Image 1 (cartoon, helix red, strand yellow):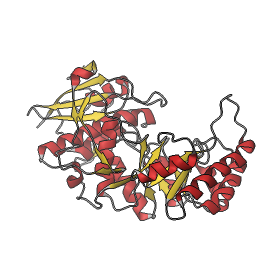
Image 2: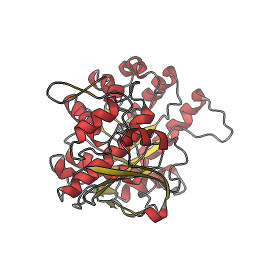
Image 3: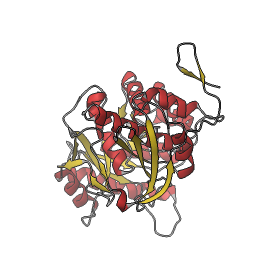
Image 4: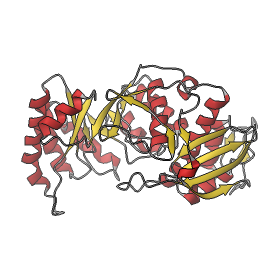
Amino acid sequence: MKITRIRIYRPQRLNPHFNQSDMMVTLETDTGLTGIGEGGARDTLEQCGAMLIGEDPERIQHLWQMMYRGFFYPAGREKLHALGALDLALWDLKGKIHHAPVYQLLGGLTRDYVECYATGYPWQGSQAETARACLKAGFRAYRTAVGDISDGVFNARGQGEGTLAACREIREAIGPEQDWSIDFHTRLDLADAIRMCGLLEPLNPIYIEDPLRSENPGALAALRPHARVPIAVGEQFGDRWDIHALIEQHLIDYARVTLPNTGGITEMVKIAALCETHYVGLIPHFTGPVALAALVHVLASQPVPALMEIAGDRPKQPAHLTRGVNFHDGKLWPEARPGLGVEFDPSAAELVAEISERSAPVPMYRRPDGSYTNW
Protein backbone atom coordinates (compact mmCIF):
# COMPACT_ATOMS: atom_id res chain seq x y z
CA MET A 1 0.00 0.00 0.00
CA LYS A 2 1.26 3.46 -0.92
CA ILE A 3 0.14 6.99 -0.15
CA THR A 4 -0.89 8.61 -3.43
CA ARG A 5 -2.47 11.96 -2.60
CA ILE A 6 -3.15 14.34 0.27
CA ARG A 7 -5.89 16.93 0.12
CA ILE A 8 -6.23 19.96 2.39
CA TYR A 9 -9.63 21.49 3.12
CA ARG A 10 -10.68 24.64 4.95
CA PRO A 11 -13.98 24.21 6.79
CA GLN A 12 -15.98 26.90 8.58
CA ARG A 13 -13.92 28.46 11.39
CA LEU A 14 -14.56 26.55 14.61
CA ASN A 15 -12.28 28.10 17.24
CA PRO A 16 -12.18 31.89 16.69
CA HIS A 17 -10.54 32.48 20.09
CA PHE A 18 -7.50 30.34 19.32
CA ASN A 19 -4.68 30.95 16.84
CA GLN A 20 -5.13 27.34 15.80
CA SER A 21 -6.00 25.80 12.47
CA ASP A 22 -9.18 23.85 11.77
CA MET A 23 -7.85 22.51 8.46
CA MET A 24 -9.02 19.05 7.43
CA VAL A 25 -6.68 16.68 5.63
CA THR A 26 -7.42 13.47 3.76
CA LEU A 27 -4.68 10.96 3.08
CA GLU A 28 -5.44 8.72 0.09
CA THR A 29 -3.88 5.40 -0.88
CA ASP A 30 -3.65 3.25 -3.99
CA THR A 31 -6.16 0.82 -2.42
CA GLY A 32 -8.93 3.39 -2.19
CA LEU A 33 -8.79 3.71 1.60
CA THR A 34 -8.58 7.25 3.00
CA GLY A 35 -7.50 8.55 6.40
CA ILE A 36 -8.89 11.72 7.98
CA GLY A 37 -6.94 14.25 10.07
CA GLU A 38 -7.26 17.78 11.36
CA GLY A 39 -4.93 20.72 12.00
CA GLY A 40 -1.97 22.52 10.52
CA ALA A 41 -1.54 25.42 8.13
CA ARG A 42 -1.36 25.05 4.35
CA ASP A 43 2.38 25.62 4.02
CA THR A 44 3.42 23.25 6.81
CA LEU A 45 0.90 20.64 5.69
CA GLU A 46 2.29 20.83 2.16
CA GLN A 47 5.87 20.50 3.41
CA CYS A 48 5.18 17.51 5.64
CA GLY A 49 2.62 15.92 3.33
CA ALA A 50 4.94 15.94 0.30
CA MET A 51 7.34 13.69 2.24
CA LEU A 52 4.63 11.02 2.57
CA ILE A 53 3.79 10.52 -1.10
CA GLY A 54 4.78 7.02 -2.20
CA GLU A 55 5.37 5.84 1.38
CA ASP A 56 3.84 2.86 3.18
CA PRO A 57 1.17 4.39 5.49
CA GLU A 58 1.46 1.60 8.04
CA ARG A 59 5.00 2.67 9.04
CA ILE A 60 3.61 5.45 11.22
CA GLN A 61 6.52 5.68 13.65
CA HIS A 62 9.02 5.86 10.78
CA LEU A 63 6.97 8.47 8.94
CA TRP A 64 6.66 10.56 12.10
CA GLN A 65 10.43 10.57 12.55
CA MET A 66 10.88 11.49 8.92
CA MET A 67 8.48 14.43 9.06
CA TYR A 68 9.73 15.62 12.46
CA ARG A 69 13.44 15.46 11.62
CA GLY A 70 13.48 15.81 7.84
CA PHE A 71 14.00 19.56 7.73
CA PHE A 72 17.03 21.71 8.41
CA TYR A 73 15.52 23.44 11.44
CA PRO A 74 14.08 21.42 14.35
CA ALA A 75 10.32 21.18 14.44
CA GLY A 76 8.51 24.12 16.04
CA ARG A 77 4.97 24.08 17.33
CA GLU A 78 3.44 25.24 14.03
CA LYS A 79 5.04 22.36 12.18
CA LEU A 80 4.01 19.95 14.95
CA HIS A 81 0.41 20.98 14.37
CA ALA A 82 0.62 19.96 10.72
CA LEU A 83 2.55 16.81 11.54
CA GLY A 84 -0.17 16.00 14.09
CA ALA A 85 -2.91 16.38 11.50
CA LEU A 86 -1.18 13.94 9.14
CA ASP A 87 -0.45 11.56 12.02
CA LEU A 88 -4.17 11.49 12.92
CA ALA A 89 -4.93 10.60 9.30
CA LEU A 90 -2.34 7.83 9.35
CA TRP A 91 -3.87 6.27 12.48
CA ASP A 92 -7.38 6.63 11.08
CA LEU A 93 -6.20 4.87 7.93
CA LYS A 94 -4.43 2.13 9.90
CA GLY A 95 -7.61 1.39 11.82
CA LYS A 96 -9.53 1.11 8.56
CA ILE A 97 -6.88 -1.21 7.10
CA HIS A 98 -7.22 -3.57 10.06
CA HIS A 99 -10.98 -3.06 10.59
CA ALA A 100 -10.36 -1.95 14.17
CA PRO A 101 -10.84 1.20 16.26
CA VAL A 102 -7.60 3.01 17.01
CA TYR A 103 -7.87 2.25 20.73
CA GLN A 104 -7.52 -1.45 19.90
CA LEU A 105 -4.32 -0.75 17.99
CA LEU A 106 -3.03 1.11 21.05
CA GLY A 107 -3.54 -1.89 23.32
CA GLY A 108 -7.27 -1.92 24.00
CA LEU A 109 -9.50 -0.18 26.50
CA THR A 110 -8.28 0.67 29.97
CA ARG A 111 -11.52 2.45 30.98
CA ASP A 112 -15.20 2.28 30.08
CA TYR A 113 -15.55 5.97 29.31
CA VAL A 114 -13.63 9.23 29.52
CA GLU A 115 -14.73 11.60 32.26
CA CYS A 116 -15.13 15.25 31.24
CA TYR A 117 -15.21 18.67 32.80
CA ALA A 118 -17.04 21.65 31.35
CA THR A 119 -15.49 24.96 30.38
CA GLY A 120 -18.08 27.68 29.81
CA TYR A 121 -21.09 25.60 30.83
CA PRO A 122 -24.28 27.53 29.91
CA TRP A 123 -24.90 30.18 32.54
CA GLN A 124 -27.76 29.46 34.91
CA GLY A 125 -27.86 32.84 36.66
CA SER A 126 -25.22 32.28 39.33
CA GLN A 127 -22.03 30.34 39.93
CA ALA A 128 -23.89 28.08 42.35
CA GLU A 129 -26.70 27.15 39.95
CA THR A 130 -24.34 26.77 36.98
CA ALA A 131 -22.05 24.44 38.91
CA ARG A 132 -24.99 22.35 40.14
CA ALA A 133 -26.42 22.05 36.62
CA CYS A 134 -23.05 21.06 35.18
CA LEU A 135 -22.50 18.27 37.67
CA LYS A 136 -26.10 17.11 37.44
CA ALA A 137 -25.53 16.68 33.67
CA GLY A 138 -22.87 14.07 34.46
CA PHE A 139 -19.66 16.09 34.18
CA ARG A 140 -16.89 15.15 36.59
CA ALA A 141 -16.07 18.78 37.41
CA TYR A 142 -17.22 22.34 36.89
CA ARG A 143 -14.56 24.79 35.81
CA THR A 144 -14.41 28.50 36.56
CA ALA A 145 -11.68 31.11 36.04
CA VAL A 146 -10.12 34.13 37.71
CA GLY A 147 -12.51 37.00 37.22
CA ASP A 148 -13.13 38.32 33.73
CA ILE A 149 -13.23 42.08 33.33
CA SER A 150 -15.21 44.40 31.05
CA ASP A 151 -12.91 47.41 30.68
CA GLY A 152 -9.74 45.56 29.64
CA VAL A 153 -7.91 46.44 32.88
CA PHE A 154 -6.92 43.35 34.87
CA ASN A 155 -5.86 44.09 38.43
CA ALA A 156 -4.50 40.82 39.76
CA ARG A 157 -4.51 41.97 43.37
CA GLY A 158 -8.06 43.19 43.07
CA GLN A 159 -9.22 39.89 41.61
CA GLY A 160 -8.29 37.93 44.71
CA GLU A 161 -11.30 38.53 46.93
CA GLY A 162 -13.84 38.37 44.10
CA THR A 163 -12.42 35.12 42.78
CA LEU A 164 -12.28 33.65 46.27
CA ALA A 165 -15.92 34.58 46.89
CA ALA A 166 -17.02 32.96 43.62
CA CYS A 167 -15.10 29.79 44.40
CA ARG A 168 -16.60 29.63 47.89
CA GLU A 169 -20.02 29.88 46.31
CA ILE A 170 -19.19 26.97 44.01
CA ARG A 171 -17.85 24.78 46.82
CA GLU A 172 -20.85 25.46 49.05
CA ALA A 173 -23.23 24.72 46.18
CA ILE A 174 -21.74 21.37 45.15
CA GLY A 175 -20.73 20.11 48.57
CA PRO A 176 -17.53 18.42 49.66
CA GLU A 177 -17.87 15.29 47.52
CA GLN A 178 -18.01 16.88 44.06
CA ASP A 179 -15.27 18.54 42.05
CA TRP A 180 -14.50 21.94 40.63
CA SER A 181 -11.45 23.55 39.06
CA ILE A 182 -10.18 27.00 38.20
CA ASP A 183 -8.13 28.37 35.32
CA PHE A 184 -5.74 31.22 36.11
CA HIS A 185 -5.42 31.75 32.33
CA THR A 186 -1.70 32.59 32.69
CA ARG A 187 -2.89 36.05 33.83
CA LEU A 188 -1.13 36.10 37.18
CA ASP A 189 2.45 36.88 38.02
CA LEU A 190 4.34 34.62 40.41
CA ALA A 191 3.53 36.43 43.66
CA ASP A 192 -0.18 36.70 42.85
CA ALA A 193 -0.33 33.06 41.72
CA ILE A 194 1.21 31.95 45.02
CA ARG A 195 -1.24 34.07 46.97
CA MET A 196 -4.24 32.80 44.99
CA CYS A 197 -3.23 29.16 45.38
CA GLY A 198 -3.04 29.68 49.13
CA LEU A 199 -6.46 31.32 49.26
CA LEU A 200 -8.09 28.50 47.30
CA GLU A 201 -6.38 25.56 48.99
CA PRO A 202 -9.09 25.16 51.71
CA LEU A 203 -11.74 24.86 48.97
CA ASN A 204 -10.00 21.75 47.56
CA PRO A 205 -10.05 22.35 43.80
CA ILE A 206 -9.37 19.28 41.68
CA TYR A 207 -6.58 21.35 40.07
CA ILE A 208 -5.38 24.88 39.28
CA GLU A 209 -4.91 25.38 35.55
CA ASP A 210 -2.17 27.51 33.98
CA PRO A 211 -1.10 29.43 37.08
CA LEU A 212 1.76 31.19 35.22
CA ARG A 213 2.67 32.20 31.67
CA SER A 214 3.97 29.35 29.53
CA GLU A 215 7.09 30.86 27.94
CA ASN A 216 9.30 29.91 30.90
CA PRO A 217 8.12 26.52 32.20
CA GLY A 218 10.92 26.50 34.73
CA ALA A 219 9.16 29.26 36.68
CA LEU A 220 6.87 26.56 38.04
CA ALA A 221 9.82 25.41 40.15
CA ALA A 222 9.45 28.66 42.11
CA LEU A 223 5.69 28.23 42.46
CA ARG A 224 5.56 24.57 43.37
CA PRO A 225 6.94 24.71 46.93
CA HIS A 226 4.29 27.30 47.83
CA ALA A 227 1.28 25.73 46.05
CA ARG A 228 -0.25 22.77 47.83
CA VAL A 229 -3.01 22.35 45.25
CA PRO A 230 -2.79 20.14 42.14
CA ILE A 231 -1.42 21.98 39.09
CA ALA A 232 -2.39 21.38 35.46
CA VAL A 233 -0.24 22.85 32.66
CA GLY A 234 0.48 22.20 28.99
CA GLU A 235 -2.26 23.34 26.62
CA GLN A 236 0.15 25.82 25.03
CA PHE A 237 2.90 23.21 24.62
CA GLY A 238 3.78 20.77 21.85
CA ASP A 239 5.79 17.55 21.99
CA ARG A 240 7.37 15.73 24.95
CA TRP A 241 10.47 17.91 24.83
CA ASP A 242 8.29 20.86 25.78
CA ILE A 243 6.88 19.27 28.91
CA HIS A 244 9.15 16.43 30.00
CA ALA A 245 11.04 18.46 32.61
CA LEU A 246 7.79 19.54 34.29
CA ILE A 247 6.70 15.91 34.51
CA GLU A 248 10.05 14.48 35.57
CA GLN A 249 10.59 17.13 38.25
CA HIS A 250 7.03 16.73 39.57
CA LEU A 251 6.25 20.39 38.98
CA ILE A 252 2.78 19.52 37.65
CA ASP A 253 0.13 16.95 38.53
CA TYR A 254 -1.68 16.93 35.19
CA ALA A 255 -0.39 17.47 31.64
CA ARG A 256 -2.79 19.40 29.41
CA VAL A 257 -1.04 18.68 26.11
CA THR A 258 -3.49 17.86 23.36
CA LEU A 259 -4.06 16.80 19.75
CA PRO A 260 -3.01 17.59 17.10
CA ASN A 261 -0.66 20.03 18.85
CA THR A 262 1.73 17.41 20.23
CA GLY A 263 2.44 16.01 16.77
CA GLY A 264 -0.35 13.45 16.80
CA ILE A 265 -1.26 10.18 18.45
CA THR A 266 2.25 8.78 17.91
CA GLU A 267 3.69 11.44 20.21
CA MET A 268 0.73 11.63 22.58
CA VAL A 269 1.08 8.02 23.71
CA LYS A 270 4.77 8.64 24.48
CA ILE A 271 3.79 11.58 26.67
CA ALA A 272 1.19 9.34 28.33
CA ALA A 273 3.93 6.80 29.11
CA LEU A 274 6.09 9.57 30.55
CA CYS A 275 3.15 10.69 32.68
CA GLU A 276 2.53 7.16 33.90
CA THR A 277 6.19 6.81 34.89
CA HIS A 278 5.96 9.89 37.11
CA TYR A 279 2.34 9.49 38.34
CA VAL A 280 1.01 12.46 36.41
CA GLY A 281 -2.45 12.53 34.83
CA LEU A 282 -3.66 13.75 31.41
CA ILE A 283 -6.26 16.48 31.05
CA PRO A 284 -6.09 17.53 27.36
CA HIS A 285 -7.26 20.94 26.21
CA PHE A 286 -10.14 20.91 23.71
CA THR A 287 -9.26 21.64 20.08
CA GLY A 288 -11.26 20.39 17.06
CA PRO A 289 -13.81 17.60 16.51
CA VAL A 290 -11.50 15.11 14.77
CA ALA A 291 -8.82 15.72 17.39
CA LEU A 292 -11.44 15.14 20.09
CA ALA A 293 -12.32 11.78 18.56
CA ALA A 294 -8.62 10.89 18.50
CA LEU A 295 -8.24 11.94 22.14
CA VAL A 296 -10.99 9.53 23.14
CA HIS A 297 -8.98 6.67 21.60
CA VAL A 298 -5.79 7.77 23.37
CA LEU A 299 -7.30 8.42 26.80
CA ALA A 300 -9.44 5.28 26.64
CA SER A 301 -6.35 3.13 26.02
CA GLN A 302 -3.93 4.66 28.54
CA PRO A 303 -3.84 3.77 32.27
CA VAL A 304 -3.07 7.26 33.61
CA PRO A 305 -5.72 9.35 35.41
CA ALA A 306 -7.59 11.11 32.61
CA LEU A 307 -10.11 13.88 32.19
CA MET A 308 -11.23 15.66 29.02
CA GLU A 309 -12.18 19.31 28.61
CA ILE A 310 -15.47 20.09 26.83
CA ALA A 311 -16.41 23.62 25.74
CA GLY A 312 -20.01 24.31 26.76
CA ASP A 313 -22.39 21.50 27.63
CA ARG A 314 -21.51 19.20 24.72
CA PRO A 315 -19.03 18.87 21.84
CA LYS A 316 -19.98 20.82 18.73
CA GLN A 317 -20.95 18.82 15.65
CA PRO A 318 -19.70 20.81 12.62
CA ALA A 319 -21.30 20.62 9.19
CA HIS A 320 -18.23 18.99 7.62
CA LEU A 321 -18.43 15.92 9.88
CA THR A 322 -21.35 13.58 9.36
CA ARG A 323 -20.21 11.39 12.25
CA GLY A 324 -18.26 12.38 15.32
CA VAL A 325 -17.81 11.41 18.95
CA ASN A 326 -20.24 9.59 21.22
CA PHE A 327 -20.99 11.99 24.07
CA HIS A 328 -23.77 11.65 26.63
CA ASP A 329 -24.28 11.93 30.38
CA GLY A 330 -21.29 14.29 30.56
CA LYS A 331 -18.90 11.61 29.31
CA LEU A 332 -17.14 10.52 26.12
CA TRP A 333 -17.69 6.89 25.17
CA PRO A 334 -15.34 4.82 22.98
CA GLU A 335 -16.83 3.74 19.66
CA ALA A 336 -15.93 0.46 17.97
CA ARG A 337 -15.98 1.91 14.44
CA PRO A 338 -12.76 1.41 12.43
CA GLY A 339 -10.11 4.10 12.66
CA LEU A 340 -11.03 7.26 14.52
CA GLY A 341 -14.70 6.66 13.82
CA VAL A 342 -15.34 10.03 12.16
CA GLU A 343 -16.78 10.69 8.70
CA PHE A 344 -15.87 13.76 6.66
CA ASP A 345 -18.07 15.47 4.06
CA PRO A 346 -15.74 17.33 1.64
CA SER A 347 -18.67 19.22 0.12
CA ALA A 348 -19.00 21.19 3.37
CA ALA A 349 -15.41 22.52 3.19
CA GLU A 350 -13.23 24.39 0.70
CA LEU A 351 -10.50 22.42 -1.07
CA VAL A 352 -7.36 24.57 -0.83
CA ALA A 353 -4.52 22.26 -1.92
CA GLU A 354 -3.64 18.83 -3.29
CA ILE A 355 -0.31 17.07 -2.89
CA SER A 356 0.53 14.19 -5.20
CA GLU A 357 4.24 14.70 -5.90
CA ARG A 358 6.90 13.57 -3.47
CA SER A 359 9.37 16.13 -2.17
CA ALA A 360 12.06 15.80 0.48
CA PRO A 361 13.65 19.10 1.61
CA VAL A 362 16.96 17.62 2.79
CA PRO A 363 18.81 14.36 1.99
CA MET A 364 17.40 11.33 3.82
CA TYR A 365 19.97 9.54 5.95
CA ARG A 366 19.47 6.14 7.52
CA ARG A 367 21.49 4.03 9.90
CA PRO A 368 22.81 0.69 8.58
CA ASP A 369 19.70 -1.07 9.89
CA GLY A 370 17.43 1.26 7.89
CA SER A 371 16.16 3.44 10.75
CA TYR A 372 16.00 7.18 10.23
CA THR A 373 18.75 9.50 11.40
CA ASN A 374 19.43 13.20 10.95
CA TRP A 375 21.11 14.65 7.88
